[in-house]
Image (cartoon, rainbow, N blue to C red; front, top):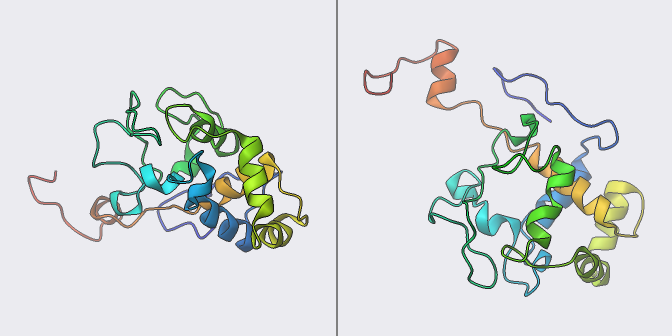
Length: 176
């Protein structure tokens, strides 16, 4: 992980070291709509990159069945530094957070068993898992590990505020 100036070293679990192939796999999974029950919604559907990996176009995020949840998706930039995830702190690591939206009946509404079957049947995924984790056998745990590796790379440290903290720019009175 290339941590930008001004940010501390990223904490990474010993059992899930960040690798180029793991991050690439996690990115592919993050944008893959097959993680949802009807193959219409990916993680990126609610964590939209153009909105800083959040869902700013909606008051509440909407799942695959058109049902609004009770909250909006969290922004994901610098999420690797968080000790509690989800708005209610329900998850304590990126690895255990990944399951929650996939299996939530209001969000992606899919079982992990079906996700594994869909990915295992794909022509590319077994090789990608082999490159990232040394096995063509896809498991829930490896899916979560790959997603976490990708999410740890979503770093932001060069906003105007960050530049101001480093003494590189001045803020307008309104910005202050």
